[in-house]
Image (cartoon, rainbow, N blue to C red; front, side, top):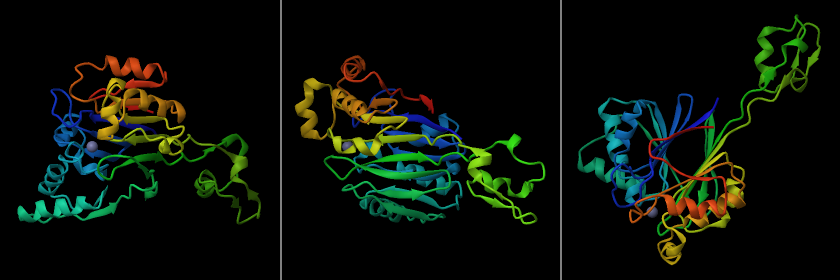
Amino acid sequence: MHLKLTVLGIGSASPQVGKNPSAFLVSFNNEHVLVDCGEGTQHRLLEKSIKISRLKTICISHLHGDHYFGLIGLLSSMNLSGRTEPMTLIGPEQLLDILNIQFLAANTSLGFELNFIKTDNSKSELLLEHKAFTIETIPLIHRVPCTGFKITEKAGRRHLIPEKLPKSFPVAFINLLKDGKDVTDPLTQEVFKSLEYTKRGEPAKVFSYCSDTAYNPVIVPIIEGSDLVYHEATFTKELEDRAAKTQHSTAEQAAQIAKDAKVKKMILGHLSSRYKTTDAHLEEAEKVSSNVEMAVQGAVYQI
Ligand SMILES: [Zn+2]
């Protein structure tokens, strides 16, 4: 199994041509997690031929509009299409109240269950354990409560070493060995140790999403070693004061996080609309870390 990231939106608060506000789709084969849902996200999903019926988990980092104004539309479309399958929604406490008031005003009752899990921006915690992945929060510093998300693929099953296994080994027990369990042959009482007859599966892949945040080195140990990290870089360092005041990061600060956390790759987005190109951000980040590049709207990263 592999982790795939589809970049659906890298914009910031002011609308920009060709850039959707924040939205990212993390996929493990047919399991998808939507992270943030800016305006227009359902259209970007349509363009990528992602069936919204396949979405079972949505994470919202914070309640600034450019990160969730697309959610009411997306959930309404799911309802219109007759969805009955439950949806897990992760986000700040007030999110559920906001959705409920909108559905109430529209006299809409959802035909599917919303399993809401509230985030707490004061600590990192494991919020969801799925058979294919886990979701932990990353506490961020912003003007309203905000968390990022660390999404970790479950490690692949162990691989059998067939030449080691005797031909008489009961086929029905092979999956137990692959799951790391030792097997006792019921006839002969012979014990087969998983470690002896299997080798390690694929290592787990990790994507960390660091939404709006002031420079926050507290997150370094949490995202350490991630295969792919998205980090905001609203400003360049000339506007470091403004970044501190609005609780955003500069490209240099984001790259410092990439370097300190030894991440394999970091992509930067959420640039202020005052910047017409990404050149200054990239130049600034590259001076600190060679593992940083600019996020591209619509790009797909396979890790
Ligand atoms: Zn924000």
